[in-house]
Image (cartoon, rainbow, N blue to C red; front, side, top):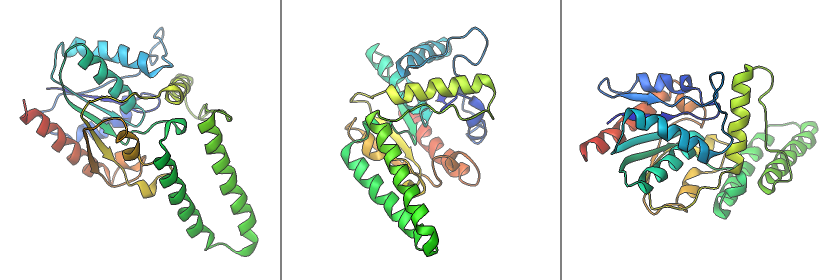
Length: 257
């Protein structure tokens, strides 16, 4: 069975190239390139549309299941949508793997908000203990502003789109913008799909704990913790641990066939 991997924001397969190189040599690994990367291609602003388009692409390679699909970050939402489409068509998904995938703030469950708020307050309190008295007031103002901005995004009061500045080429900025729009709009529905979640160290993240999100959406969640933050888990020195855990999950799925 080939392994299909959906990258995160921007849809660049190079993001996960180093991970693919660390997987066993007998794997067939396909990275799903974002539509819109080439001239004339549609740029999708809905997770559902991404799922339909990318599903058509993988079925050109593998017409029928069982399928092994993984997605990193926002790519996990696309993988989740693809898996639901496949099951609805009567196909089997042997493994659906989400690599540190969360949802937009507006869809965090209450316990995820509570855990995130407590963790961030502890984080900022530890930083403030090292500051001089003259630095406390600006630090408190910064933390308060960050909290209000996050709450604003969750309630729709603040803007949700960030074009990531001028440092990216126009094509990548357009894809990132589309990804952010899709991410902000997508509210995953509950399903009975078995999900394997590879979760980064939540204490190193300013995101919510994805385990609290997916426990609400499936009764069949398997969780593996891997070292590093959301961004560093896919880079050295943490990358080999992620590759080893991913390989273990894929091997188990292949052995079950």
